[in-house]
Image (cartoon, rainbow, N blue to C red; front, side):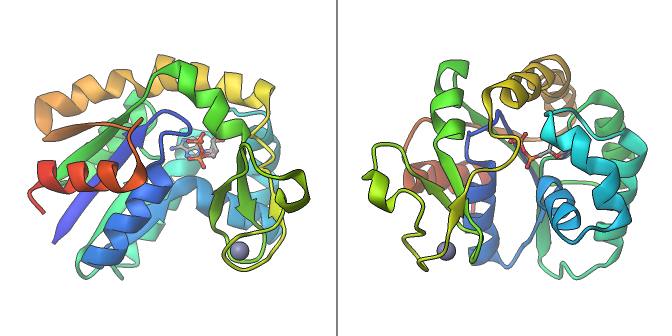
Length: 210
Ligand code: ADP
Ligand code: ZN
């Protein structure tokens, strides 16, 4: 059983790296932001509650986040383990998590702030297959077509300069400080996220002994 948390600034590639690790080691990838986005799309009660909060880049209230995480983990469909992405994001969530679950390691993707806007603002998500894509420097005629399936690429509603500034501020004020808390209790693998996707993945596995 392997249980990991993946952390990192916006655009550092948490989702991409978590999915690569999950696919090869049969881990369940639990992305709290994806769960919220799914609820917004499906117009659920939870979706109605988080929609405005997310669109301006603020954090959803801890009680709501904790119950989502608890419910998701209680499903126990993670026979070989899980990798949780986007949680915890502040001291209170970290305390709740450390009290309730023991984990095998934390992956911290490190990237300077200067790189964030470039990555996040050129990121698109395929509305058909859900893949992430980067349209920076691409021919405008092909800029909104998914290279994998031909589906329509769309920007996330919160990938705009204003919401990104709010998310970055929260990352530095609330999320970054919990790395120190984790470092006292858990193994933290610090990886340079400015490298290419496969290099980052190899480095994660090396540090985790996988
Ligand atoms: P990013 O890490 O790029 O900000 P995510 O997809 O992880 O994007 O999260 C999107 C949004 O979902 C956040 O801006 C926030 O509104 C909400 N959210 C996700 N995880 C949490 C969390 N642990 N606590 C509070 N809000 C969260
Ligand atoms: Zn696609």
